[in-house]
Length: 315
Ligand code: SER
Image (tube, rainbow, N blue to C red; front, side, top):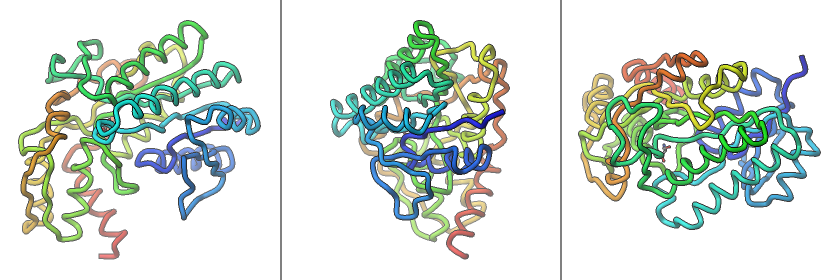
């Protein structure tokens, strides 16, 4: 079978950079076109600069490169989004519309759209949040993801576009750092511990949030895209869970490796965002429909994170 020709937007980001590497491993380097608004110094070709709001350029690339699948990761995250709500809406929504229209017009086989736990809000059941539930997001990022999910379902029903989506929890990985999210503390804390520096956490100690290790996130993302279409019964977005922990819990886990590591708490505006999100997620629909199964818990993830970060620093 001919391998897919895949365009990834937001490819320089925390998830994008890892996803591109894994897609290239599976489908061949030349079949994966990475794109972002700037070219990184250590660029691996094929790479193209695409501003997701530049519709003409996007359509030109999709057509000329004979793209058959799109992973649309470009977006502004929760915390950063609050600094400029209207611009965030424009980038997250118009960007998605440009992708959806190009996918429809050029008859793209499959599209991936990442949603988030940010679609949930203060009125959502916080423990084991169900797949179908109250979703009244507190951030413009969450509003854009919720609207995006519904637009994806709309394009699926109306135009038969095969678009698939998951609601990512906080993603933790040792590669590219995240930018502008509320769950970013759970990445930074590992860097500080390995660098033997103190860490000031911007969330309070008992703020539980759903989290997922990068390796699980990447496998789940490609798995949902590879699943037979009839297995994908939710056409808004699937709940996805890995683990759930508080800053105090990840701190204690890291202290098993670094007993002298010190963390203090200084909650800022991101506390209110975290408080509006749920504590843990029921992902049984993803497990039952297309076989989602994460491998990492907090203990295993912590061992792996520390091992890789030490390796990178040569310590
Ligand atoms: N990790 C994201 C954020 O914190 C949630 O999707 O914004």
